[in-house]
Amino acid sequence: MKKVYFGSNLKMYKNIEDTVKYLRELTELTADISREEIELFIIPSYTTLDRATTSVDRNLVRLGAQNMCWEEQGQFTGEISPLMLQEMGLDLVMIGHSERRHVFGETDEEENRKVKCGLEHGFTTLLCIGETAEEKKYDLGPEVLRTQIKIGFDGVDASETGKIWVAYEPVWSIGVNGTPATADYAERMHAEIKKCLIELFGRAGEEIPVLYGGSVNPGNAEELIVQPSVDGLFVGRSAWEADKFNDLIRMAKKKAETARD
Ligand code: PEP
Image (cartoon, rainbow, N blue to C red):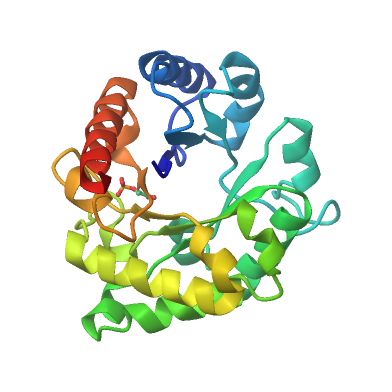
């Protein structure tokens, strides 16, 4: 069976103690699930990473950073370099989360510099993409996603696809004011994303996991995960209590298994 991806970005929530507690609970609760069958990853805030990396069984949960500078060092006040993340033993970085793009104004070109830097430093690099509500209104989702993919992965070689993950997170679906995408809509966009990745990378593009994120919850996780082009779920609020995330993972995994049998 194909691995099912489950991850969460903790955003600017949870201090060190809460993060470690959460990670310990989550790893204990999910310990019996084979990591051949699921990839479980959590992306906490920078200040928690050092403690988090030494406090949990990293065979059970992969830890990542929420952002990264495209340079190793220099006059980049407030930024974190790939070397600093490597120093903590991290090998996963998220680039271009919707809030980076829309709250902090990052551009596709900047995401591309970060993606290339992440890959050059051996990180599994998770690029987040998604259209705004305005773009969706004119059914521009496919065009926007293609642009974000083509610029985001510009200059990346097909040999590097083993370290690329993509998260489709429509801007209008994320966070407290978000509306979840319907399963049909999500599948349509995921299929476009996969088509574009294959255009860019050839057969190697087929192997890139594409995760759905945006108001995933216990009520929609099953219908989303059974979509043929959805390889995993990138969950926010519904993942921030370990027992609830554990329930969601088990429910979605079971559904994915029955659908793929
Ligand atoms: C997110 O912000 O990446 C996200 C998926 O959040 P939520 O599930 O809370 O909408």
